[in-house]
Length: 256
Image 1: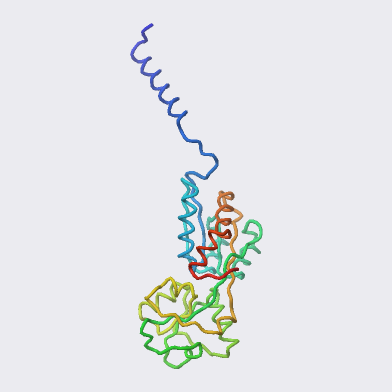
Image 2: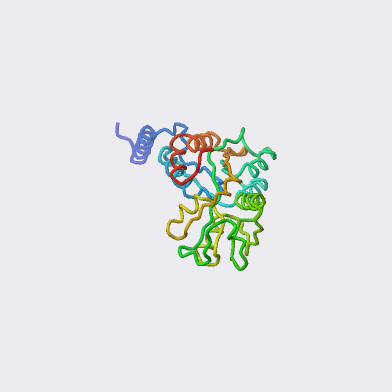
């Protein structure tokens, strides 16, 4: 029986739709079409950028949105309701603030450690060679603010070493300290050894034995209000697993 033109067209459209549905790939719960938001300390930029690429490759359709800043700033944002799925801090103090406010899922896990180094311009015009040299009159020293993990570490080291530092400025993130050095605005800056490595030939790194007075441990945790808790747990597993640990070690981070 021949159908009217309009009816035949409707049947054809229905058949095509059914065929397309039958050929569509199932989601399978893999997070396709989802965005995982990761708040991470500024010093983690290089390894976490690499980890995000690895995670996206193993979770097709998932995008990792990275937000880097000082740990204190990130903790404040979370306490004010900023949406995130994972928080990785550069110290246990700022993670504790978030955990004490019942904003994390489960217990945080330490995944890396770091120590400070002195960053100077490649030519080292102020002839800095030791931690004590940073206190010389006229030295333009830049450090992190005291509430930032790298600033707290600098204060601890200075106190234990008996060196009175008089910085020209205090920054809210370690990357800002490094920026002052690379731009020539500072004679020296206290940053992490990993930042010196990441900067390449833009700075000269000067290790100092007093850095052992303050070893920062980096914790990571899922955010309690996350809508992507399974993906958050998978990302944390990548960070703490063998692949993540290799990427962190290659960036200069120590074991937790």
